[in-house]
Image 1: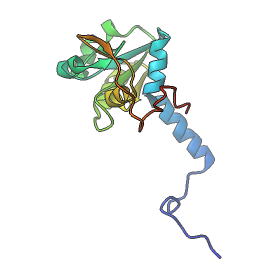
Image 2 (image 1 turned 30 degrees about the horizontal axis):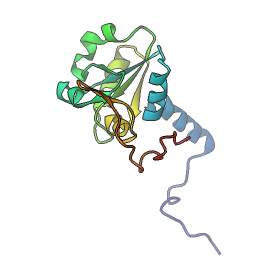
Image 3 (image 1 turned 90 degrees about the vertical axis):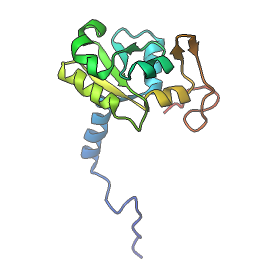
Image 4 (image 1 turned 90 degrees about the horizontal axis):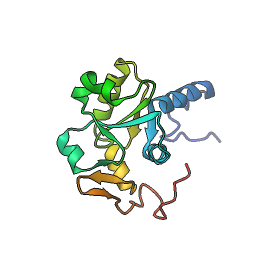
Length: 156
């Protein structure tokens, strides 16, 4: 008896070599909030996290340890913010916003190694990671839909 096709397999999965190239390329362009948090926690000197939102967004709260460089200022100010050879990690509001993608493109045009932080500020805050405002640093209760409530890494 033939197997019935499912919505998952109507279009067959890519061959292994093609899949390896695709997923390796994605990891070359993207990182996630957990990995960024780990880099910031260790003080990784080779990573600069850049909040690309405007002043209102930055003031409302931002990744603790990030620098503020709105996209329209990148060409003029990148040299003063990013040490030579450092990998830039861009973020904006969240997955529904492509501001971090536009900013990453600007950094790439300037010759900087760059990655986009998946989930943006939304997932940073939802996972209970440190958020900085003018009042200091705080953490939200982790959202159980984004991270184990124990606060332990998802180990993925």
